[in-house]
Structures are given as C-alpha cells and as structure tokens.
Image 1: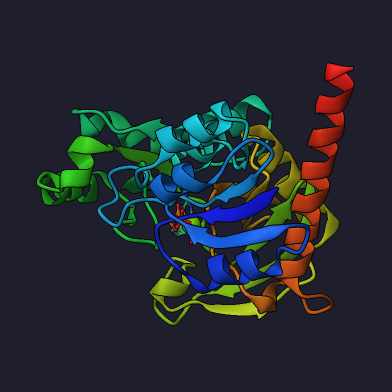
Image 2: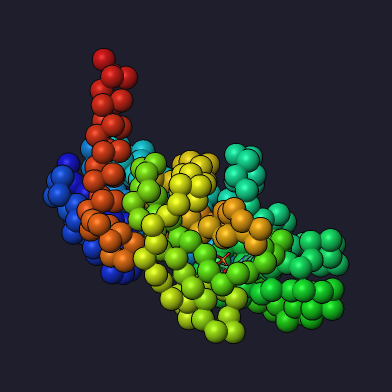
Length: 288
Ligand SMILES: Nc1ncnc2c1ncn2[C@@H]1O[C@H](COP(=O)(O)OP(=O)(O)OP(=O)(O)O)[C@@H](O)[C@H]1O
Ligand SMILES: [Mg+2]
C-alpha cells in the first residue's frame, strides 16, 4: 500500500501533507498522469487538483482520478466531490438542498438586467479563486458597466459567472478546516484597510481562531453536502448575528496557524488514515 498527493504543484501544503503520512510508503506529490503509472489497487491518494489560473475550470486530471478509482486506488476527494467544491454554482445548489444557509446564487446569462432583483450583489467567476475578478455591485448602472468590462474575459465564455446576494461585509470571515467529518483547525481572516474581500491574496491577515460551535456545525454540514474528505469552509458572519456558508474550498492551502494545540498536518493525515481504515473494513465486510 502506498500514498500520494495528486497535484500539479509542490505547494507548502502539499509537501507538508505528503510528509505527514506515516501509515505506508509515500510517493510525495505526483501529477495525475504519473500517478497512473505507479499506483495500483489498495493505494491511497489525496487529490488536490485546483482551479485553473485562467479561472475557467478545474486543473486537468479529473478523468485520471476516475481511472485510478477504477483500478482500485482509494481516492480521497473523489472527482465528483472536487467538482462539487470548485463549481461555485453546484456548491450553492448542494448547500441549498441541505438547508445550509448560503447567499442566493444565480448563473449569469446574456441578460444582466435580469439580475437587478438581487442587488446589491457580487459577480464572480463560476470557477474562481484568490479573490480574482470578484466584484461588488451596488446599483443597476454598476451592473451595466461591469457587463461591458467583463465581456472579453475568456473565463466568462468558458466557465461562466455567477451572481450572488451580497452579505454586508463586516471586516472578517472564518475559514474552518474539515477532515473526514471533523474540524481540524480554523483561522479568522481580517480584511486590509479599504478592502472588502477577505482573501489573503487581497491583503487580509490570518489570525488564530477557536471556532465557536455554531460555525463548526455549519462547516461540517456544508462539507457533508459536497462529500469532500478534506475541505476548508469559508463562513461569513451575518450583521445581525449568526453565520452563513460562502463556499467550500476543495483543494485549500492551509498552514500551522490553523491549529495552535496540534500539528494541523498530523491531525489531517490521522483523519484520512482513519477514513482509509474504515473504508477497508467496509469493503472486507462487503466481500465476506
Ligand atoms: N456574496 C458575497 N457576500 C459578501 N462577500 C463576498 C461574497 N462573495 C464573495 N465575497 C468576498 O469576496 C471574497 C472572495 O470570494 P470567493 O471566496 O467567493 O471567491 P475566491 O476567494 O476567489 O475563491 P476561493 O475561495 O475558491 O479561492 C470572499 O472571501 C468574501 O470576502
Ligand atoms: Mg474564497
């Protein structure tokens, strides 16, 4: 039995997760094609394909994950689950169907004026990341201007855009890391001066956070709807109190600051090892 992280880059998170794996030999970080050459039945992978830099879809390799599963490799963050996390429209529909509070979300079609009833709103790529091309729109004129501005963007044609009810920003959000159905850590992101988006790439600061039970429960419910074994849930505080789930990140980067009591990579890997063990036991029962 061997383990590998399936990804296209050796990010700090990928390398740390690969070296925390102790239950078996670890191949480290492999791209999907190389994984097909070396892995076989009984092996375990954590798939960490992300959103493309061009914001028009998911990095290639989903079909290689399907093939790995067909060959008997245990894939955590199965291809369907990765899609459920990365496609912001699909995530929203899954959250709604599980009655998890989340902003109203619609696909942007040709007629942008049809979105007026959602104002004030946020327009963003359906497959977005890093806060790139995420726009806040307060009134109809702004909507028309944005429609013109985005008209030539390749991601708009290929991946599409979504419009989302704006949750009035109050300067921070929570990011809750969930591994195999349990909270493994969390941080608060505080926005930088003059910014409303909470992405670190937009200048936000990460601060250690002990997540309160209500937010932890929401994070677990959200992840359950996407069937992800490892995810980070973005939770927005509501101005009147309470929280809503903004999104579920399927290949999130995280660091040691997510857990001040234990090494977060060890915690995550222990949870995945547990999931693998539970899966093997189930299969053995099934075969008996
Ligand atoms: N509907 C919304 N209401 C309030 N704030 C929002 C809304 N949508 C986005 N934001 C703000 O913009 C930021 C970026 O948006 P979002 O998380 O949807 O995309 P992203 O960060 O580019 O994607 P990813 O988290 O997958 O990398 C959020 O962290 C949040 O601060
Ligand atoms: Mg985000």
